[in-house]
Length: 312
Image 1: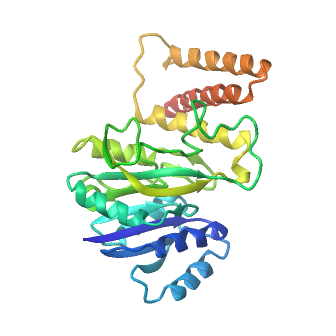
Image 2 (image 1 turned 90 degrees about the vertical axis):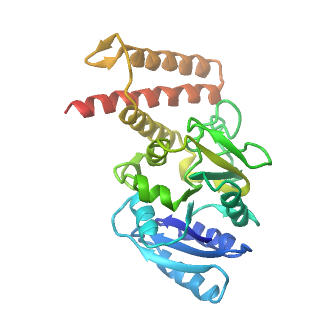
Image 3 (image 1 turned 180 degrees about the vertical axis):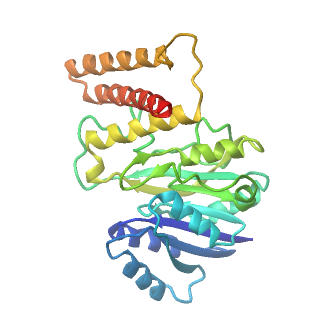
């Protein structure tokens, strides 16, 4: 079995070296290539990777550098897919740290579940070196899982039915035959410098669900993922969740009997409801609860924005 590991990267050289080191230091039994795709970085990403290539020359895992000039993580991912030849493709973001044994855990899961197409590992928050604001939840019911990641289904590999709870793009793997049959990532979705429009992974998994509706949780495929200081601000969360709302409305038809200007009336009701709850908890000095409902409001506002964008 041959394995391809792909890391798309953009202007994160300060984080990237730790990611590369954590992957290249893994002990594996199968043939593995590790491809870092530089998505038109303006920092010293290229130099960092070439230094790592020299450092790990002769290592069991073969490290390669690719360049993709079109902006967007999914352009970089698709370039990596096209230029790799592994039977399975593992994607790791450029700011994660892979726990020792994590790569072999993925490979073992591929062999344990040969009929499955999608795999995702355990994710824990890499504790920041700065104080988090009071409104930012890192666990519990007010966690924003699209931004602050905490994925843990226990200590044993298991098949998770459906994609309502799905693997997270910063640590996931896909069988190559799935790409060959259903296509690669949509490039109109995903994060870029100018827009935060997630949803490419979910849209891809919807295509895969025509064949197999579920994914494999890889218990020992543990990565640590940080929240960065520039992300620990309300404006980032609002923009990101607004994008989630747009993608949700784009990918799923919203059924409704009562509409206004073609928009399901209950979406406006949700905006009012969560706005009132955000205000209620703000007055009660409960910042975490208040901001959760505020971002729920922004998610539904994204639905409204997408509705009228489609009418143009």
